[in-house]
Length: 165
Image 1 (cartoon, rainbow, N blue to C red):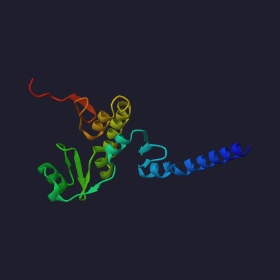
Image 2: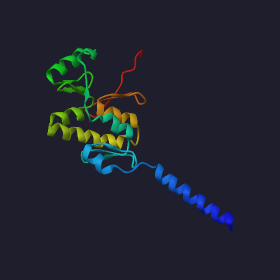
Image 3: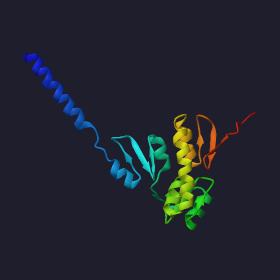
Image 4: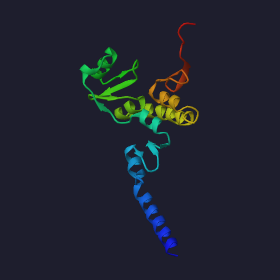
């Protein structure tokens, strides 16, 4: 009987320790700040819920302070000076900050129509993430999927030309 009581006590203590080790849900704060809830493994972008951490991170919704001297691309330096967008590198600049996805850039500029277009790309990327998460990430950043060798522009894929053939 003592063994059974000891086993029950150990089980209760283990369950309490497990509960205490889990992160608390921060969905309310994440939803308000377009952030990620670690406990629920979900990110919020406008009205959308994203279950892919890689896709959420690729959107990089918050700008980054940047030094003009650190930019190697002439297009990026010109875009930084003009609060513009470098199509070659897929980066937007506003008030000395870099935005690394089209959605982040248009959100920072408050361009409602452009944000809606980018949210449509994100919706398609959420579905694409079920097939290939790297393609989904490339879709939202106008990048290239190294696995599938697809280049994305405005959410539309085209094959990457293979050299030597």
